[in-house]
Image (cartoon, rainbow, N blue to C red; front, side, top):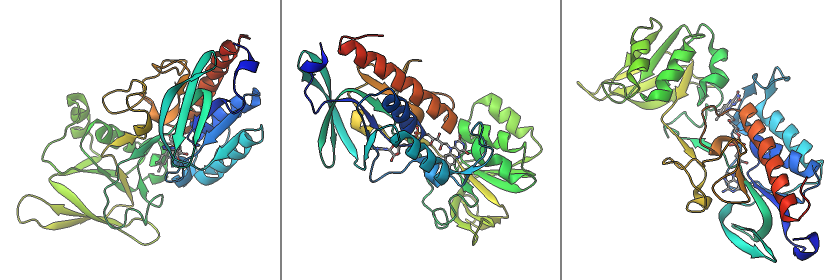
Length: 321
Ligand SMILES: Cc1cc2nc3c(=O)[nH]c(=O)nc-3n(C[C@H](O)[C@H](O)[C@H](O)COP(=O)(O)OP(=O)(O)OC[C@H]3O[C@@H](n4cnc5c(N)ncnc54)[C@H](O)[C@@H]3O)c2cc1C
């Protein structure tokens, strides 16, 4: 197929999501002269924008999440990508002349492209208790790797009892003076080896059968109010300066359910070249099944996805590298 046979309105690449993954993909795609549209979502935001301080992005020792996002976005748009604040609702395979492409439907319009990069991230489950929204980023965190070092020699609580919660609690003992795991049951759900490590770690305490009622503090966290489910249902207030919540993470991938293969939790399955089960659809960042969800890994995925999308589109157009 040649360029002439592709209708004018068909883009080379649509990138869904404008977090580190999507914006890095946009930077690489537009810098390679691909006609690129970023659909950046109107009812969601990138996790980076709610991150107070980032100090593990290589080469930038300290930057606010908001600033980093702003820089990534400015850099991506400088090479000609356009961005629209629209929520993607669905997408489908579309015949395009002699080839095939994708139609992406948002709450406002539909767009056609030869390739799509899904980079819609994931959302940490929140407790939904008073104080959580107000103190977000000021003592409340959903990421120990990101925020643990801010709690050197302080007392923190970890809410949850699964693998992530226990693993992150163990990680936090590197910094914190004391880590209290608050769990709504009387036993952990984590793997036995993690449980063994947690039980034998002197810095870790447990608050069993505890349901978080409220996170206390003004300007910063000063305590965690917990209702004990067994006994008389009394309340305890843990005097902590940090609360790490690990009660699950949900990928934002509803719009492509049934379109590409996902794992049982809804994370997109992508290979090391960021290819999904469907030709022309690539995925990057926190929305894919992988082990480390961080800014730096999202950026790496985004760059790879854009590079692979470019190779794919060039081949469709009949001018491979
Ligand atoms: C509180 C907190 C602190 C963190 N601190 C750090 C840290 O210090 N260091 C670090 O490396 N990592 C940190 N992380 C993790 C890091 O933010 C993520 O790994 C990273 O943002 C993932 O990038 P992403 O582009 O995959 O997803 P996101 O940044 O979540 O971006 C997803 C994008 O997709 C958009 N979107 C979602 N659904 C749709 C849709 N249907 N249609 C259109 N757009 C959509 C969203 O609006 C957003 O633009 C932190 C996370 C949190 C929550």
